[in-house]
Image 1 (cartoon, rainbow, N blue to C red):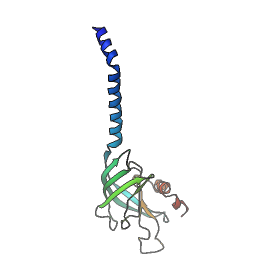
Image 2: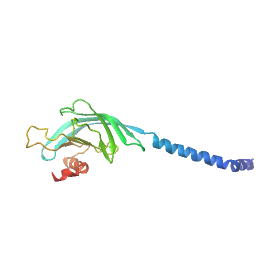
Image 3: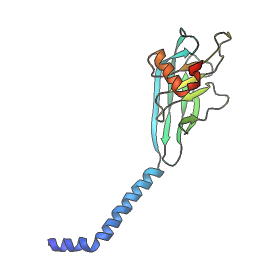
Image 4: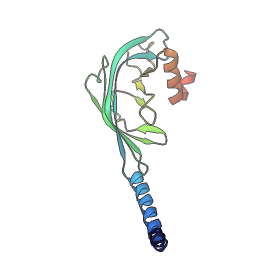
Length: 170
């Protein structure tokens, strides 16, 4: 009986090996073509900082919800909403449709109530730039930003300088 099994395998090993290789290739193709979707939900109190004013710190509630779609063949895509309490134009959910290209998220419209949105490829380490000069007093106008998850002003500044090195000299 054992010899018959050996003979069967010996006679069909090319077919068995071919089927195994075909299944492996099919798995690789499916993993490359089919995108994965990950829900993103963030709701926390964040502090708004001003680059030029070390004493400025204002608390807001930030809510970011959406879906992060990753694909090997296409750019990553984030579709969701962003709400920031206490900020004009951000009290109601603002729809974000962003694509990740060359390590940066793109897709904010010119009329967006925020001036910049940066995050890691998994939507971690967020940094949100608020519009310059949103104060009426021109002396305090400048760079305002939110860095969710950064516990201190120094950690928030480090994140700002990481995403926007040009601000290091201001």
